[in-house]
Image (cartoon, rainbow, N blue to C red; front, side, top):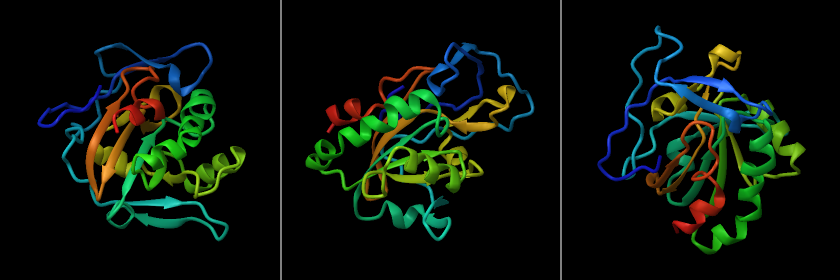
Length: 204
């Protein structure tokens, strides 16, 4: 789903199944029935024109995890932020993350100052994933939303508890200018289309 100014979209848990390949691109909606009925009513999904909520994420460093405050991170610059359901999963590792690395220069030419990848994983996992891809923070800033609080506030939770994966982030991309969302691309089901670097680049 591509966000639009003024649009309201209620976030909800969906029934999912893991298709062939066991990758995060294979999380697909197979019905409108929520698999867990004890979930709290989710917040409205963030929209274009909204400000990024205040939250504390974390980033792996050689000295250990360090806090990253969203108010500071997004202030005064343009950030291409994309989120994945899980580090090290096939599509995320083979296509989603590398796509932003490959298009770093093109995004910079369009005014993007920083590329950031977010997942509901801890900072150690995100740091290890970056190292496995031979990335540095100059390439992509790997942001860990370990407890999922930030993702929950955005209204972009993917409920995968039925498969032992807990609550994860939906796959999406957004462009954030000085803390305000100016582009928002949320994938449907298990698709990998609108959250790609190429799609975001075409919007700039």
